[in-house]
Figure 1 (tube, helix red, strand yellow):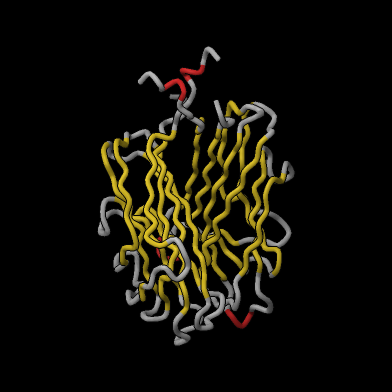
Figure 2 (cartoon, rainbow over the protein chains, first blue to last red):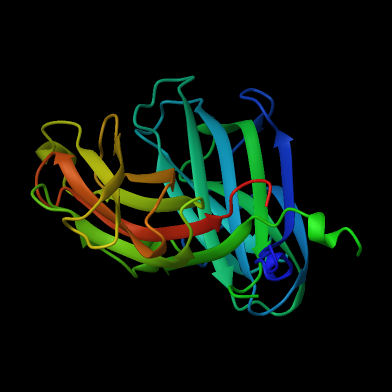
Length: 157
Length: 160
C-alpha cells in the first residue's frame, strides 16, 4: 500500500470521434482514385485532437470503418485507409489496404486497424482518418466510423 | 489534487513494434512470403514486471496479399495468425485466428486486425511474438507486405 503513490499511470489522454456508430449511419460514395504514395488523393472521414504530448510519449491509434460494394464494374476493388497527422494534408502515419472478397452489390465489410508512433514534436497534434479507393464509384462508406487514440507516457514514470 | 491517491491508474506499461507502417505494394519496404509447414515470425514485443493479477492486452494489424496469378489459385487460401508467449516457435500458443479471401485475385490486399487478452501469468517478464502461416494453400501463395503493428498493454487489477 505504501507505494501506491508511485504506481504507474501511463494513460495521459484519450480522445475519440465516432461520427457513425452503426452500419448504414453514414453514406459517403468514394470517387477518389488510388494512384501512388505521391498522389494518394485521400478524403477525410474524421479527426481527433490530442494535447500535451511529449516527445517520449507513445500514441496508440485505433479505427473501425464499415463499407459496402455498390458496383461490379471491377473485380475485388481495393480500399485504403490512412492515418495522417496534423490535418488532411499532413504526414502519413499509416496506410492499410483491404479488399472485397466478393464483388456482389450490397456486400458489406468491416476494416479495423491499429497503429502506434512515438518521437513526436511536443505539443498538440491531430490525427485524421482518411480513405482512398482503387476505382471510382464502386465502394461507399456506410458506417460505423470510429477513430480513437491514447497518449501513453513513457514506461517507468 | 487531494483525490489523486484515489484515482484509478491501471495502465502500467505499454510497448509496441511497427516494422512497417505503409502498405507494402506502394512503399516497397517489406515482402515476407508465408509457408504451409511453419510459422513465420513477423514481430515481437516485451513486457516486464508483470504481476499475477495483471491483465495483458495485445493488439495487432497486418496487411497481406495474394501473390500468385489468379489462374494458379485452386482454392481460397487461408492465413493463420498466432500469438505466442516467450520462446517461439514451440512455446505457449496463446491466440490464433484465421482469415481468408473470398474470390482471390493477384495482388489483392487484406487488412487483418486482432485483439487478445490474458491474465494469470507467471510474474516477471514475458515476450509476445506475432507469426503468420498458410493453412490452406501452397507455399508463397500469401505474402505479408506490411504494415505490421503489434502493441501490448499491461493493465493493473481493477480497484487499485
